[in-house]
Image 1 (cartoon, rainbow, N blue to C red):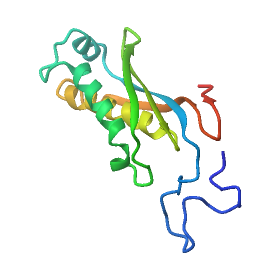
Image 2: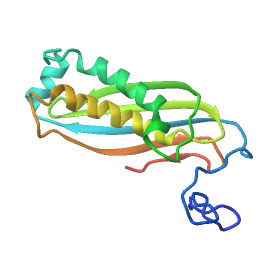
Image 3: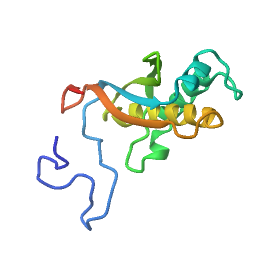
Length: 164
């Protein structure tokens, strides 16, 4: 979808050409969901330590779960043009490939006038950064990414499903 409104004006800029938060007051309230995913690539020994609960800072996935939820709830504090949203649900799931990759997937829901794509992306980013923080003593060269929007539903632009 284009960054332009129906009138052909850029929606994120005011009459002086400066950034502004889009006015959503005229939009309809709909149920909106978004799912995002991120990958953390690491040595097999680091992944094993996470799965076996042998990281010195504690239960990595439990802390990353809370960080992801908190990140989703505080997205508007991180991303300047995001609206603060009353989220109705945030869930994070951790899986791995059994070798060297940990996957974080977040699903975020709301009933509102704007979508929760940024909240889902922030959730997986905060969780992935927390995994890195808690495991950096074991391995400093972990790689975070790709991070991407997997899907979204609701709103005027309709549904989206990533082909990746």
